[in-house]
Structure formats: structure tokens, C-alpha cells
Amino acid sequence: MSADAAQEGPNEAVAEYKRVLQAVLERRPSGTRQRLALTLSKNRSFISQITNPVYSVPIPHRHLETIFEVCHFSPEERRRFLAAYHRAHPQRLRPVRDGRRMRAHTVMLPDLGDAERNRQLDALLADFIHGLARFIDRG
Image (cartoon, rainbow, N blue to C red):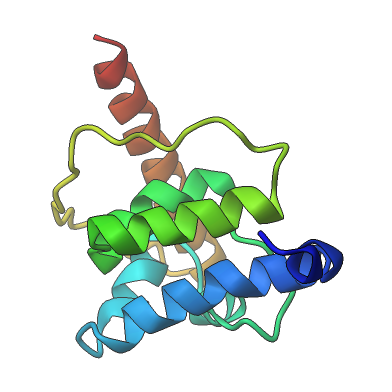
């Protein structure tokens, strides 16, 4: 990293990894952003904030593996993204899992008739699945 890059600060470092993500998304099918929002149990405005280099909103570390899977990062794109991410967030040195790939599985849930309750149910299910995946990884 150059001296200029070190002086640019955290906002430029965040923008750097977001530019990598943005470039990856531009090469993916049009429904990728929506699928990412659904997989993360977030709305599209959250996806817009974490993919736009203009916004300083960082991407939460817990979402990285999901982003890599849904967006189908190449090994080089993943390496560039993680290098920029670690420059932006040096305190987050815990490595993202490099091993097993995840696969998608659609689950049909009842519509609870309330957008907030539906969102909460989606979040509970996503948390459960992520916890289950961590449990499986521990062997």
C-alpha cells in the first residue's frame, strides 16, 4: 500500500473493496442483487448501501462468505476484495472460511400477514442456518 493510500483513511479503504464488489455484480445476472438481499434477509436499500463506494457504510464481516457465494467471486476477485477489506478493517483479522462452498436451498414459509413479522421470521431462519453451518464446520 502506498503512502497516499494509507493517508486516504477508512472511507477510501471501504470504497476500495466496494468497487471490487460493484465490478463483480456488474458482471452477474440482473437478479443477483435481489437474491443477495433475500439471502442476507435485508432489503434492497441495504444492498445499495453496501455496494456503492460513495456510501461509507461498511460491509459487516458476517456477510462476507454469503456475498462471495451468491455473487460467485473468482479466486482473484476474492483475494482483491479481502486484501482491501483487511486494509479498511485491520481489527477484523479473523479469516473468512476458505473451505466448503455453500449451496442454495429454497424453503417455502407461510406469509404471516405482516411485513415486519415476515422479516423477523426470515432473519430467525437465516441465523439458524448460519449457526447450523458453523456447527457442521466444527466437525
